[in-house]
Length: 82
Image 1: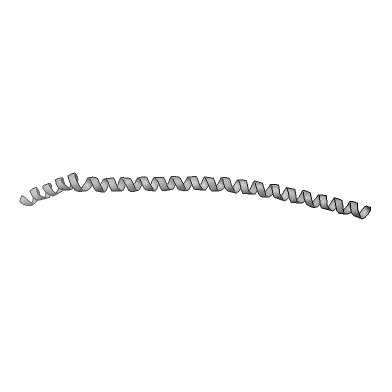
Image 2 (image 1 turned 90 degrees about the vertical axis):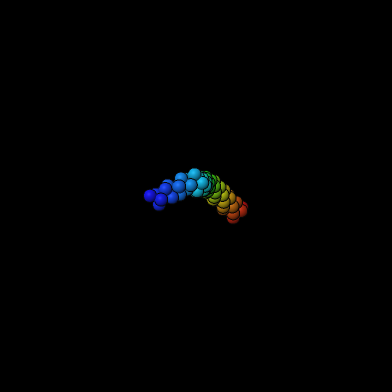
């Protein structure tokens, strides 16, 4: 009987003073994890956009270099003909 009363007092003390800080710590950790996942998703999308911009610029640079090479070949041909 005394053990039951002591147990109930311990449960009440735990529920009032111990459990709230533990629950708050768990909630804070869950929020930090969610923020980290959101940041990772945003970084992934930014990386994808940056990769697309790099590919576009590389394509443009390749086109420009091919055009310059063609111009140089035409000039060389014109010089040879003269």
